[in-house]
Every structure is written in C-alpha cells, then in structure tokens.
Length: 155
Image 1 (cartoon, helix red, strand yellow):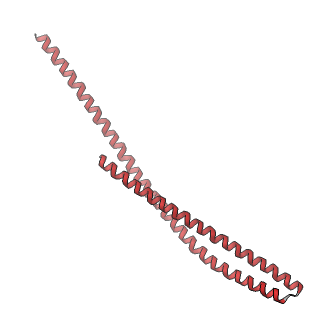
Image 2 (cartoon, rainbow, N blue to C red; image 1 turned 180 degrees about the vertical axis):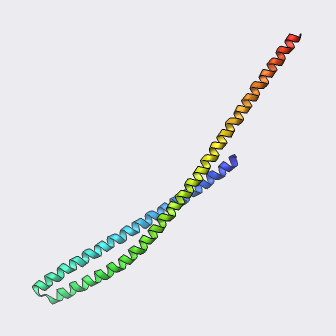
Image 3 (cartoon, helix red, strand yellow; image 1 turned 180 degrees about the horizontal axis):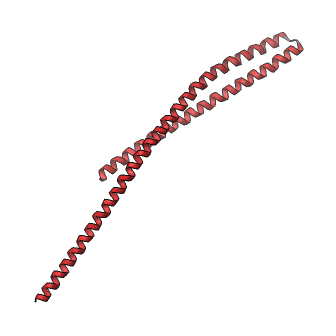
C-alpha cells in the first residue's frame, strides 16, 4: 500500500505542476486580452480626438488640417478594427486557457481525493496492525502468566 501511496504522491506532484503551468498560461492570456482592450481604447480616443480636430478645422476653414484629421480618424478606425479582431482571438485563447486550467485543477483534485483515501486506508490498516500486535503480545503474556501460575500450583 505504501508503494501505491508513493506513486500517488508523485502523480499528485505532476498534476500540481501541470495545474501551475496552465494557471500561468491563463494569466498570460488574461494579460494579452487586457492589453488588446487597452489598445482598442487608445484607438477610440485617437478617433475621438481626430473628430474634434475635424470640427475645429471645419470651423476655421483649414482644409489641410481637416484632411489630416480625417486621415488620422480613418487610420485609427482601421487599427481599432484590427485590434478588435486580435482581441476576439485573444479572448478565444483566454477562454480555452480557462477551460484547460479548470480541467487541470479538477484532475489534480481527483488525484488528491484518491491520495487522501489511500492514505486514510493505509493509516487505518497500520493502526489495525499495531493493535493486533499489541493484542497478541497481551494474550501471549497472559497465557505465559497463566501457564506459570498453573505450573506453580501443580508443584
């Protein structure tokens, strides 16, 4: 039983390492999703700023500034669309990493329960074995004492 327990300890250690690896991947993917969200916010802000510049250029009649601001707005919108695609892909990868982490955690918890059950059974068996040995010693001593007493009475 101890050999099985040792095997389960090694297996539990392996599953814990795999869980940590999957957690690290999930954290990396979460950071990537957050970065893409931030990039989208930046592009929205650039586009908003460009719209303000377009209005100001229209008010003062500066055609060159308006054209530059429109170009800047279109570029920001284009970059935002690309970033939204990247964000969607990163979100998918993050969701997959979450599923993988949860599955890994469940596997480790299952192995932990098996380990705990085997450890408990091993402990119970060890207690029974020790109790049986103690009982055997007690009975042997009792018989020895009875035999000695009987021998003394017979003499």
